[in-house]
Length: 199
Image 1 (tube, one colour):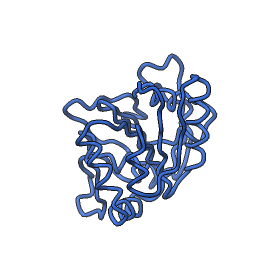
Image 2 (tube, rainbow, N blue to C red):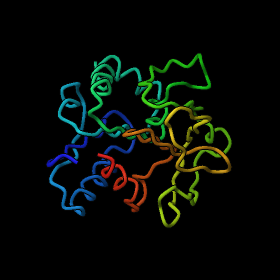
Image 3 (cartoon, rainbow, N blue to C red):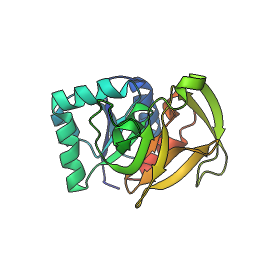
Image 4 (cartoon, rainbow, N blue to C red):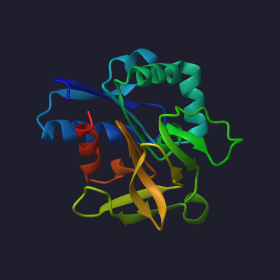
């Protein structure tokens, strides 16, 4: 891990402040020098060692990323292999290589070897909480799902970390982490801690 870390939270939609608070709590708890900051412009991305892409509406997030130049800035950092990424809910969609809906107007970052179905849980259940077994965690995580996507398949070096009713809801590929749910909406800091340890 770098001596002083800067973790950006994409400030477009979703539970931005909750991610910011959770990440700063973890940094303080770990006595890790650094800070979590809001990311609104391409130059902000260049200051980050890691970036969290929160939930929201994936089409809107994608459009803003592209129009602002942040999509290209993130892709450039990915090519240099010097940024960690975590996507929650709509952020999970943005990290995918493929969508099940090939006509969806979403510009993907294509960070992870996975296919995602948008609103997979949303059509039936809208929002719910579920106790989820996560690989490497000693006790279940109480996950909050809000019109959540699911990961329909993974390949290559993309690893499944958690499932709900046989649907993949968490995956990791190298220093990229994708979640269908919202860890920032609980007091359980284990996923933010896990993300920090990926740096």
